[in-house]
Image 1 (cartoon, rainbow, N blue to C red):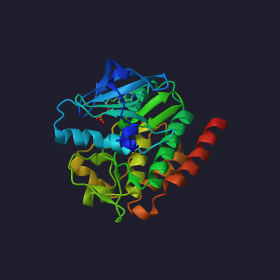
Image 2: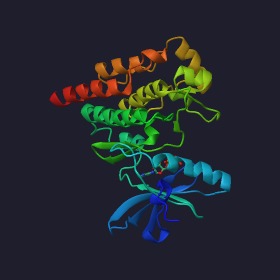
Image 3: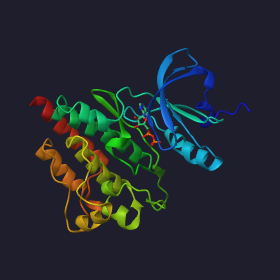
Image 4: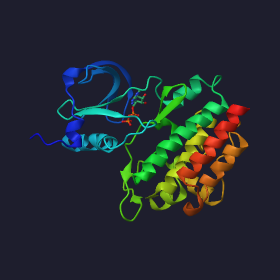
Length: 280
Ligand code: ADP
């Protein structure tokens, strides 16, 4: 009793939350919007993730994402507000008013400029540089996991597959529900996930942004992807993607993980490209 730890810091009271309409369907249950009254009396718009069939085993999986998010603090990562551990179990996060980037790209396709799309890429890259510094691999970098806070701010918002990497410096996945069309060859072949495989996935996520949320390799079956990659086939340049950005993507998709750029290099390169776009 009285001991302060991070789980207590994030334990909040259900009485301080008013739950509203359904925003979407998550893997574990519905996600609602709501308002949270903080201890200082501030009213914060929140997203409340619920867990439908929350047996002890499911609850542990559901809360593992929140556990990881407790340790994160970055302007381009969705922040966790708190967890309610008793049934019905809730994860409470900051609300991103404009929802998923995938649908936003389609809705705003006639207003989004190349400079804005480059800015989104830069912001996600900054978030990933931060995760790299914490030895965390994300493993699921895709437009479906990016949320839109405002027209000039996006945040990485789903840590369901994220893991801290161990001494061997990679995470060996055991599950089979993996996003094959986003994955690096070594992840498909050996289920090997590293920061370098996150760089590959980031490249695919940038491709999705500039192709306004088309599915990568929609013309292939999952089972055909690795053969194509090993033959040297890569995603084509989306029409709206600047040549300089596509050149970076090609480097992110080097077969050999060691020669892919790092996230901090990509931040430098993308901020230069963003500046160039603004000057045009
Ligand atoms: P899961 O990862 O469990 O499948 P998601 O995080 O994808 O669940 O959430 C499901 C849906 O809820 C998303 O597609 C999005 O529309 C909405 N959503 C989730 N988190 C937020 C948030 N912080 N702000 C706004 N909408 C959100």
